[in-house]
Image (cartoon, rainbow over all chains, first blue to last red; front, side, top):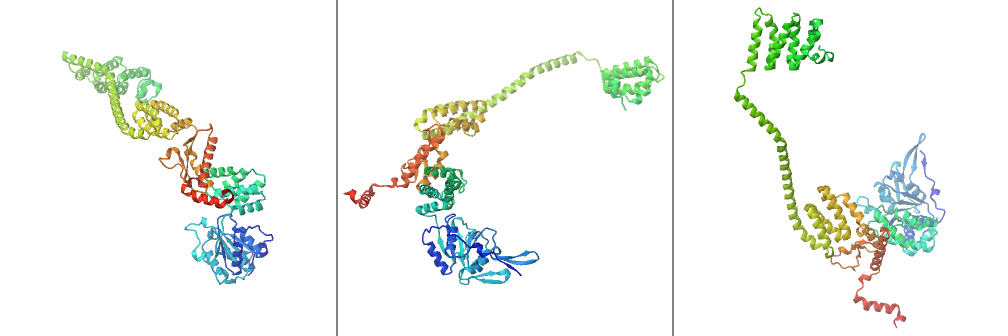
Length: 270
Length: 362
């Protein structure tokens, strides 16, 4: 019976992803990697969790297999399954198996969205066993020392029905992220959007003010990612207020009055 | 089978078989006779149509004429007797004693007509005729009297209702007046008086609505007067619709109010301003109208006090900008702690300034 794996080299980053450390997260991650401990990244949307993992993958020279988890994602989708190819039945490794075999970093983004059965395959990888059970194949794959499991988790999204169990949470080293402080966020915008420091400072100010509306009708504040989008549109020639409306105001709320108040905040800067 | 319109009305009750039994040269005469007698009564025509062919077959015109006359005479006294005589007479004509038919007709005619009316009967009948004529003449008056009775009863009910609403107004007005701002009292009293004179029930609604409109400064006194004037027009056309108008329960009423409104109402933009101030200051800030203070501290650090309407500019856009400037000003005071500064903080503040700026402090 044939076995098919995805090409590991496809997952290797060839260029250093830009990442500006906000604290000791790089050191923490490196220490966890050395100790072969799984890592959980916590933080709001668009604050740089995925970019951080990419950066660490490049920094540690490991392949990075990212899985965007969703509510239909099953354990089989992660570990692999049998499929028909012509007259032959072949086993196809899932992304988690690919990462384990390659000794890379497996990054399960928003893991809480996936089905509950995925935790069954995650747990043996996160303790001292460090193995992946391919139940359908009757095989156990031992993770090499270079392998690391990273999950991300946005506490703001979770509800009573959808939350990580404590038995899962307590298997990870947690690194908490938040929106960067103004001076760092400004540097990020300058670097990522290519805008001047004055425009970056204004965008950061807008972000700061809009984030004050969290818990007042906004589920989440405006992310650094959206501020980068705004900067990129401005850099591309879009009028600043229009760029901010399209990237900062409209995506984060459908509440007309909330949108209007955000537009007024934008207007105080541009 | 009967003949249709081709034989006129007679066709309704002359069967084809009957007509066929009449000699052809006598058919027109037969139809005419039946038609004439049927003018007296339909049933009489039917019976004569049945019997005449038998008589016509005798070719004795006198006999036919006698038959028709005798039947007509008896029918004049009573048509049912006429029908029976029309049926029996042809047989009697054939009796050997030719006087039998005449005597039979005489008996039946008398029996049907009865004795000749006496004077008393004639008098009673005349009196009855007169009374019936007078009663017919009275009918329109009776009808009119009933109409007037209904109208007066409705007015009584309306007046009763009016008095009931006047009592309710009497109870409701004093507490409303106590809540009304003194400067609006003259115009308020005038307007409520106008509505009360037209309809006390509508004035109950108007009293409440005008209180809110004037106290909330949603309309000027002139605007309120205009609103009431237009409402009175509606009330005159239809009481129920008019009451709805003064309750602000009709689209027309709200439209009129919207037309009369001057400036931008705070309540329309309060949430936007609240979010704006909260975003700017980083603190939860409430927006309150000067009319909602009820003794609260206007300089507290958790709210910004603004006028209930902004009428600085003609257009709402610039009035909103005016609100925004005032809100940003208030948010600035809240963000930087202007309102939480206390005189007891002065020594510590001076010491801090002395520490921070030692050169200048000397």
